[in-house]
Length: 209
Ligand code: SF4
Image 1 (cartoon, rainbow, N blue to C red):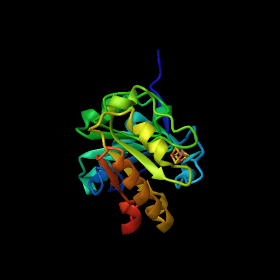
Image 2 (image 1 turned 90 degrees about the horizontal axis):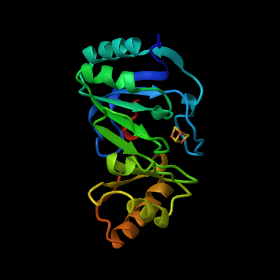
Image 3 (image 1 turned 60 degrees about the vertical axis):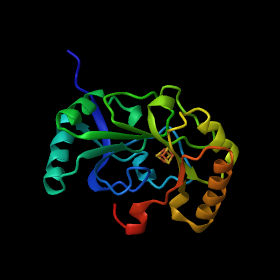
Image 4 (image 1 turned 180 degrees about the vertical axis):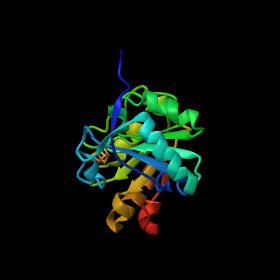
């Protein structure tokens, strides 16, 4: 008989979504352990290895405990890279708990469902964007790192529908990155892609998890 999957989880907590179009919305976060990339600017590198094996049932019980104190409607699966693990059963269970589901992914893996909101965030050096995410993503989010160029932004924008916004996110809200992001935003605008925003990380401004 097949065993239910055990998922490796780094942490589960509640806060406000600090990034992208859902910024400011109360959210339950499930941070997965493990990532297939090693970005220089990664600020969640503690989740590359460290975590605890948990069943779907354990995760949902913890989620519902936290929601009693902070009754949010959204859950965000993040990492690490959540799509590296077998999350189908967890997605079903979170839906049964009446949660709206966001998945933040580095876009190297195919999407799984049911999910209400995919945030595709391709990373250097390849900036891979899985073909099945091109239509599925509700937003394309790029960290304004040293590697990011206008050509990369425009190449990725050509792969997504015109109505899907490009979010330029300064690296850890640093001044040089905000300045660079403003320059990239101007170049993207001039190319005809007007659905673009510069969006600092709210949780770092507010100093919350
Ligand atoms: S893809 Fe995300 S979690 Fe993985 S190393 Fe890069 S920034 Fe960190």
